[in-house]
Length: 167
Image (cartoon, rainbow, N blue to C red; front, top):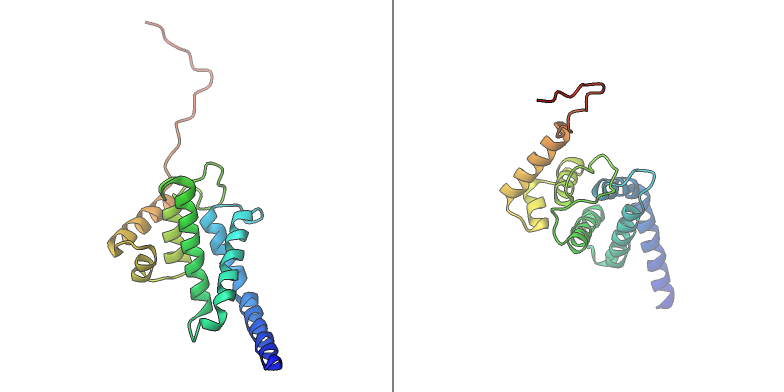
C-alpha cells in the first residue's frame, strides 16, 4: 500500500508542477495588477500567488475535474479581497504608495477590472464570487475603465514670472 501512495504522490506532484509551469506567470501578473505594485518589485503579489498555489495544491486531489486555474484565481481574488478589507477597513481606499498601472483605482475597482477584463470572467461569475449584484459589478467595471481611459486632471500648473496685482 505504501508504494501505491508514493506513486500517486509523485504523479500528483508532476501534475501540479505542470500546472504551475503553465499558469504561474499569468496568475502572478493578475496578482501584480491587483496589488498595484510595479512588475519588478511585487512582494505582496508574490505572497498572494504563493498562498493561492499552496491552497490549490492542498485541494489538488479533491478537484475532481474542476479547473485548477479557475480554483486558484478564485482563491487569489477572495484572499486579495479579504486582505484589502482587513487592511483598509473597506475595499474603497487604496494604497498610498502603489505604483502599478492600476494604482489610481480602489482595491475593489482593481479586483473587478482584473477579473472582468484581464481574466475574462463573466459578469455573473464575478458578482457571485464577490457577493455583489451583477449590476453593481457592471457599474464598478465601467467606472474603473473610465478612470483609466480618462484620468482626472491634476491642478493647473503655476505660471512663473506672473506679476501680482494689488488693489
